[in-house]
Length: 164
Image 1 (cartoon, helix red, strand yellow):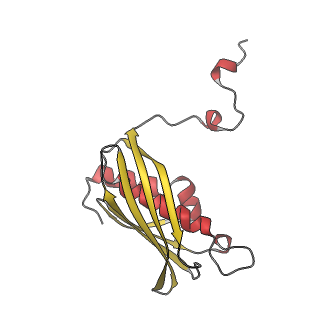
Image 2 (tube, helix red, strand yellow):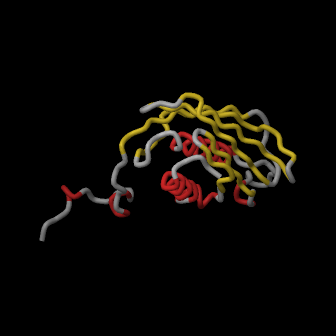
Image 3 (tube, one colour):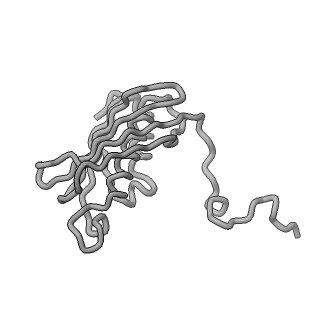
């Protein structure tokens, strides 16, 4: 599946299917340095209310997440990426039973990485291009994960905790 170092490949796979992306149901179908493809089997909650149209937020999230993974495949293991800029053009309504996203790095870099991501919607292998996104990522040295309570809105900062 990949031309990446096995540790880097495993980190990408773990990152891709974790958190919000895993909740959405995105699956990784291709992983190579600078290229990532993903797929989403459409569930009722992915559609607009009372419509066959897949919600634009689902399409945009898929493009952003897949592009981030493609960018991550070009930086050293241990680096973290964040979206700096995201532009998406919705070309037509997304209808069908699946989405497929193909992301490729168009400008690798040590700090700034630019990725294009195309999303197609379809049914049983017949797909139509529904959006094209350009995602600019910023790379930084890895950071420690936040504690759950520190990440929660309204959680007190250590400086505000009462000492007993």
